Length: 437
Image (cartoon, rainbow, N blue to C red; front, side, top):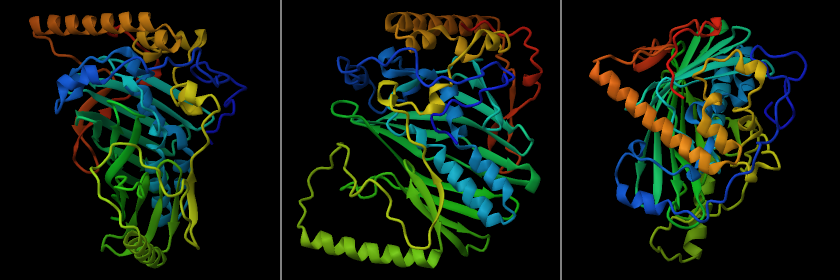
């Protein structure tokens, strides 16, 4: 569904792109001559959203565009809708939740912080959805998004506050905020929060990424839950990228086990088979450990090499999701997927339709994408100063910032604080928008 084919050729989409690009205009710069440490050593334990990073550590996308990558495997939502059995639907929703973080693998460039009032839209007829997002708050930085199926089969929405912390050798991003998926023909809503993402080796060595923490997906209609554990890599890398867990009913009876790697695939299997396999695997590991008297040296931040790259498939398992291969030029293009490669493309027809706040029109990101690193740096500085001046003027006149496409309110399914879509974006009536660029 998301492989590097040119998608959606033929009729023009409603915002103009007929045939998607498969490359960026310019390859990325080498970061070898720059030290993140020189900037970050002043910030140990601080929250990073308040620190200005040099543009060389960015990738040419806004965080609003990065969030849109949740939609790469939208076919899993369509597949969930097609099942009559709620457990099969939950399996597909769980696979979608895992696939939504898969594009972060090896993506060590930092997306640009969105400016207050910045927006991003994406229409993909070929994948069957359209999405609108808006930066609704600057301190703390909160990004809200709302996607809908073009056949009115689903709504997917959320608001994310990526809380970043620096811990000496690593940067940790905890994506606070609820994610909601509504399957309209089943009148079902699922909610969850994403795992924590950590970038290691930011002082010296090769940067590498892991995700960890528990993700609990709740079906608010049936009371079923899927509890997934994203494993931290552990001392010898055996758990690197692993994700596993169970789907259980409201009385906590296990209905199904799920396992795989968030960088590769997800399988489902009968829970008794899974538990027996785990028990056996644990026994083998213990025996191996005893035969190799391992010295427990100081924990390293180097990327561990997993025992084997792929997942050991338990007999009787069903494949729920497998990642599409990255395009051959990915390493020169910020490790982008084929889906990410098209997020910032724009043509004259689209430019005449999208609002002036859309991040495709942001000059610093456009300059970086074109390989003009000095201009990107100057523009980023200019935009940040312009945003500060606008905030100062508002505080002088005691004027509050008004969001345009989202409003604050409780999540209708779990009551958590959320930002909800106010409607009317797709009417294309963009009067009196802020001048943020």
